[in-house]
Length: 114
Image (tube, rainbow, N blue to C red):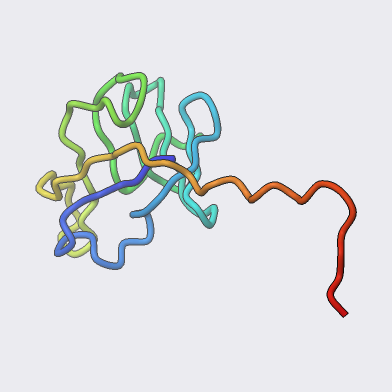
């Protein structure tokens, strides 16, 4: 699992911020399934967007790191108010633990209080 972090005053309410689940390779899907964190080989960029095959999104970093947590480049974001790319959002991606596994099922005969 990865979590995308950034300045709250910049990204408050941004739907692409949050927790992403690793899908193997260089693609992760946001919990809820609407957005992807992926590596675009063609552009040598890590990108956050809705289509992991498009090479487009709302966040990107020009870095060929093997993991988004190892990106050293500055993350750029699309500012809808000014229709420009900006890089002052202090974006970073951190690895987090996923949810714990469910508890084991009891073994042996079940008893019921009556």
